[in-house]
Image (tube, rainbow, N blue to C red):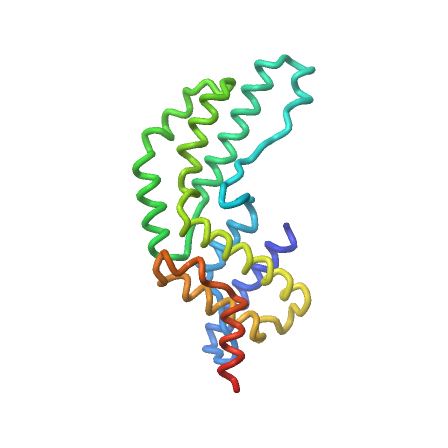
Length: 208
């Protein structure tokens, strides 16, 4: 993870340096764009059959240390703290999703403040908190953007490790830049159809 993060930081440096001399031979990811990609490198947003999977720590070993009740509370606290932190870190590229996230945070702000006083040893309270926090992931357009960014991240990591000196000049890198540009302004219903693979194929076909 640390190595991957360094790769993306290098992308920022390369972008700023090359843009400063107005280089025309490569495509670049802006520092703002990279900051969004980094979020989905650093934090695990997992889906299973379109359902978001919250963080689940293993606290079974703690029950023998200081009792079941305390272990349940600590586990609940850890789950909610982690998911709330991930939620607060969320950033998107698509303009519609940016607005949707902002509206979601404003609509549930009072509830988030009340979490501090919740008894997190009770599974019903944990579930209620997760329902509100994780409800943002129920939107198809949000899931689609997260999955697209994760696929772009995986490929960016692979090509930057394989050819660190020249990957920013590759068609693959340009395709990833292009699809992220398209993601910014496309409609919410179009996000699920975006892929760097299809973008690269289209770019390749235009060469002939």
